[in-house]
Image (spheres, rainbow, N blue to C red):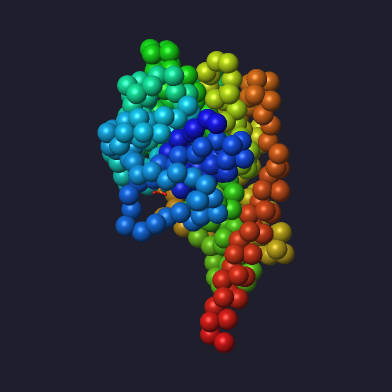
Length: 329
Ligand code: NAP
Ligand code: G4F
């Protein structure tokens, strides 16, 4: 059976992609960086089925060694410093992980086995101050954060290694995708976690930044499927993956709070701390190329996404409350 290496396997997307590849009977090798405490929450249910190997996008030799030892046919490069606000406070580190890390992996592939198929996690953040609506594979980039700039570098170095060395390298230009496994600092999960805590009496307020920003929000497992499909094609190409619908943060709030019969305006406080030095105001993707060539389409609507995230957070906090009650009884 084929072997796939996933960098960023402990992240939201890495965990869903690992599940999908295991279902397809791949041998899955998950690269993790060394940390002082184990951070396998998202993959603990499949940990025994994955080969976990230590490596770091900052360390070229670790990448070469992993490719030599495990000989994967496919590499999915999902590791990155992925939080936009942190890219403003740690721009150089973001460039090292999110931009140069891509070159380190591509060069490791070129040296060890150029027949390896490569997936790069490109981002709709590259469109930034958008040049056209909706955004397609041909829309010019205008990134608005050090993260977006780093992703543009990662995107073009992927194209360059494809054109220079004939590597089967694809970029998925993925629009925002969410799930109960989304990091808690991203706006969707911050909202649904806040809603659950307020509903259960654990919080009284939710502090947020810009409520006018518009995003094209999809469901992460659908996007993991698109990554895999890209590497199964006859030719390497780049694809936009998106739902084709856009909503602002305020609409997300309305949907999440009203689902549990609360009025968001009674709890949400706008806080300057959560505004960014430069904002991406509007993202909406046109995934028709992925529809035609990959047969890909999203399976979950915006309302279903909001509700499944609220449900998961309420379930999580109810479980925690029951555990606390059992301990104190
Ligand atoms: P995530 O949850 O933040 O996961 C990032 C992963 O990268 C984590 O496993 C993290 O490991 C790992 N990582 C960070 N720095 C590393 C390093 N130097 N060496 C090795 N591993 C490192 O991100 P995600 O939402 O799953 O996104 C996956 C990828 O898609 C990212 O590249 C992101 O930029 C991109 N993307 C995401 C979206 C989206 O909406 N989710 C949209 C477009 C593109 P730790 O667990 O140790 O921190
Ligand atoms: O959830 P966000 O932090 O996601 P953002 O910046 O769009 O980036 C995510 O999607 C990208 C794809 O386009 C990925 F490449 C990237 O790795 C990441 O996964 O913020 C969404 C919007 C922003 O406009 C932000 O200003 O929500 C607005 N927002 C308003 N209040 C907030 C908050 N964002 C956060 N994180 N926290 C707030 O309190």
